Amino acid sequence: MPSLAVRDLRAGMVLKTAAVGPGGRVLAPAGQPLTDQHVEVLRAWGIETVELANAASRPAIDPKILMAAQRTVAARFHGQPTEHPAVRALFLAAVALQVKRGQP
Image 1 (tube, one colour):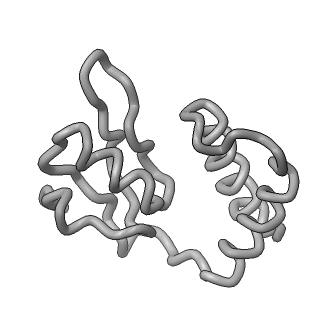
Image 2 (cartoon, rainbow, N blue to C red):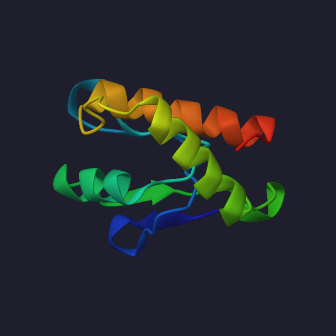
């Protein structure tokens, strides 16, 4: 799939390759649905374009399953600083795992 301007990105889209910032820092992971925070970070770091995964090659995630997984993980992360980049990365990985397992 061709590159997409970051200004046109929306939460839920999936990157084909990780978006990497200065110094090699991963700003948004590949293969996971983007969050609004990912999109904001990409814009803040001046990333102009990204390559999206081919949406036809992977099934869409049921929004109900995604929301349930996010609630479950949020309960486990209660009291943790989820705005911290490392904790946020763990949170997103935990949500992805919940969705992959099909568990809310």
